[in-house]
Image (cartoon, helix red, strand yellow):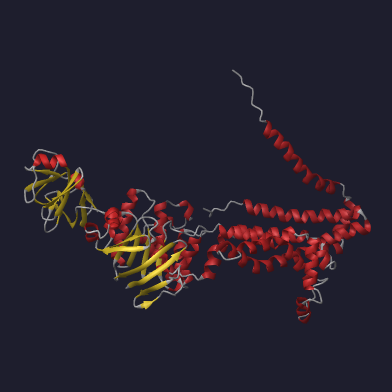
Length: 265
Length: 348
């Protein structure tokens, strides 16, 4: 007896709807790449300004990621391990940069780090100018992308059994030592992926950086400027390059995430 | 050696309440209690993971209540081993020595010895996830012992492993304890383990130590309803296991009867009161091998079951029914025989 294969309508509908999403993401990117004039792309690749701008973007985002590591990792650990009054509030504060418009964040940073602000004056005393400098870029990038690192690290720390830290302590390790020899290595994956996410997020930041430091120009701003001044065909190559750089980081992240670790439980 | 004075600590809704212990050097002290009694919390407080709210901990005449765990040199073996999953067995064992900055040569020597002692040399390059539960326990023990702690705390070291392996590991823990003469506090909810290993037992319930003493004393003379219910073990005797003409016997100054066991030397035995038959005549041609002469010391009638205490050198508790009592016309002072099978004798 032959039975007709049952058709799962829900599955089909869901797959079709899901496919729309994928096309929505992929098509514009493909379109942008295929319609870019290769000659202009080649010129753009050789363009010192573009090259410098991309380097600045990657570099500033990297510095901002490492700075955030120094301050953000301890916070992530506290949030993962300790219960204290107002913990929910702190967790909410950490998420604020995700929910506010980035231009608004830029304005807020401008006010706090501008020449007339206390921090701005302190910076000026040390010879550091935030507005219109790489320092401003770093700050803007850190502000908007910190939550990615902190939340990823927090989840990572939370998954490390407290008992392992206790064991390390009874074996003679102090708190810091147990953190660096046990907790951090065991949450390495989450922490590194949080850093890569933050880095990538920093590279793509436009709004906040635009307000605090239009110059020196990071790549997304350069793209915007090329579009404004020279039109679509000169903006596209910069866009393509930028997308490639970001995708490359993302691929590295994915490979890192999926790599099966022999040591894991 | 180690002493706690009025030690108290609150954990959320739970309380370690006024714990006073005094454990001598080289002693094997077992804390026996139901789960949730606070045994783990107690060990972790001794180890310094928690600071007590009240009371003191003294180790070798020094107060250590406020010291952080890493400076106490108290070894704690966690219930689920708590091996570091990102380190190989050998690196787990090395961990403490490296932290304490021992020289590489010394580290190698100490680690090799302890791996040998616990028979885990062959798995030294494995990661914890790929070794068995019993092996994990050994590694955890090795990782702690290699530091030569002043005192060894064991949190249910024999739980969650196969019964056969459990027996073996228990014997090894006993022999390691004898060899190293290391003061040990072992917490467990398992009566058998406690009787087998303990020099002294403390019964813990709801955050308090409710009775302390040598095993036979605690089990034969429980000081509270709780202890009686939890560990109540009648007919528990201490003595030696000997071979007499190829027959394994349990023997002390007052008693001697046949047993079956692979144990040797000093041991505890117990016989359940319901497994003993009272007979007016010596029973012959039955499968029961043991027949002791005794005198009825007490008859306690409570409900349909009657407790009869018989003095056969030591006091035996026997449970019989009211009908049996009536039919046999048992009276206090009467001489009777106690009959039980060899397999009814439980050896610890």
